[in-house]
Length: 296
Ligand SMILES: [Zn+2]
Picture 1 (cartoon, helix red, strand yellow):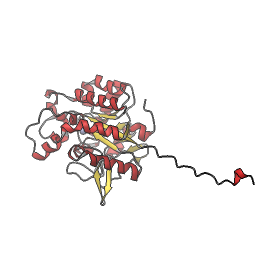
Picture 2: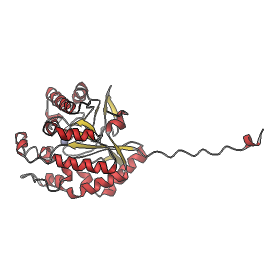
Picture 3: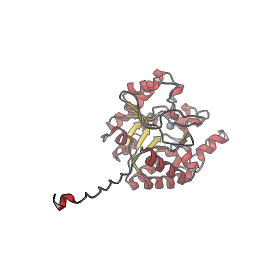
Picture 4: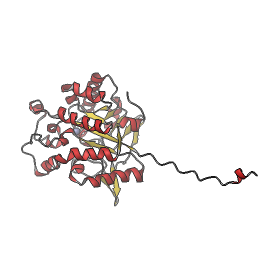
């Protein structure tokens, strides 16, 4: 036996794990379309309101460009009809355009046929503007779940490849605390990509955005996302809205204390927090992460 062969092999260093790429998503709607304000602002009044979505989305596009990150924009058909140039700018900047439905009606407040017509219309409007397939859909207020299993059939029938319509937490307006926490196939050809939660003390805690991201200290969000990446080895699905970066948006009159608090708390902290979030983790569009496709 030669000396060379007798030499014990060097231990092969374990390849360092690449940081997980998380999914950053934006629900493109204006402040007056928020579900919690629906009792105070009729849909027929939307056209009379000052629209601020365009400048707020431009701000998000600039933050993403500074961080060299891409994202998925779940855009309302109602917004896309009025701001087609904005939709084109989102797509031209390399982001994924997905659908948030047309009229921001909860799936749970519609019949199957009404729901199907709404999500088909939004998909057609977005595809007409960009000439690209729209594969993703997010229901307003996470209103898809065990109570309306027909909704997933309709989402597939409308031609979507994935839904991101479940937040597996307990909340008074939405949430399916017993739903699976991570990406799963709900039926052949259709994935559900739930908003991120952290499992602690036998329950799920919100870790993927919403008012929690503005209300709680940023360090808690960072810790939760790191923990999901490290322990669960799963990408995080994170979401926010353009109006969350707009502290000077018009105040909606007549709302209750809880609704006001949830909507307006720490709006001025959102942009610096997003900048930190973009710096602290790797982010990309949902289709690249979960469908494994370039999407162009
Ligand atoms: Zn929404």
